[in-house]
Length: 139
Image 1 (cartoon, rainbow, N blue to C red):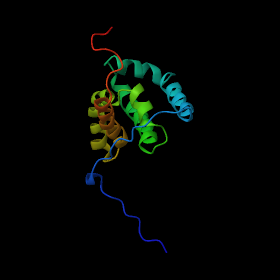
Image 2 (cartoon, rainbow, N blue to C red; image 1 turned 180 degrees about the horizontal axis):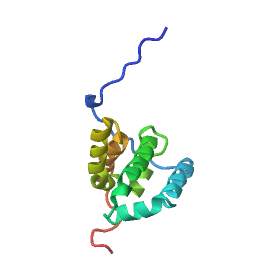
Image 3 (cartoon, rainbow, N blue to C red; image 1 turned 90 degrees about the vertical axis):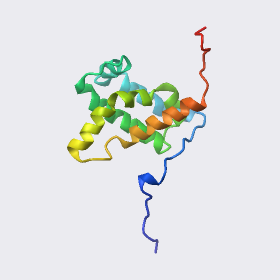
Image 4 (tube, rainbow, N blue to C red; image 1 turned 90 degrees about the horizontal axis):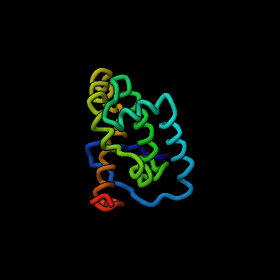
């Protein structure tokens, strides 16, 4: 008989990024994510977020959308390189974290959007380990 399942507490350490290379196998999932983000009801809210001008009513739905996408990445169902190359999760987190923290407090759900928060940290690690694809002078 198998023993009890043991889960390490979240404070035991952070997961390190598993950066690899995207393959054709990652394309359907990535295209699905792109369709969801670039079609209504999400596309207008996402555009406002990109401009740094999300409306209050955009914040929680966008945070939850990024939570769902982050969950796919953190469970290895979409390669992190592809995700972090296309999206600035850390920037999105910076804009939405106040609303997420307020929702956690209001609902008592400390786990709300935790995968999004972790993905934001991994996005920073991704950027720190990858040089820019363009020259610094913009040419």
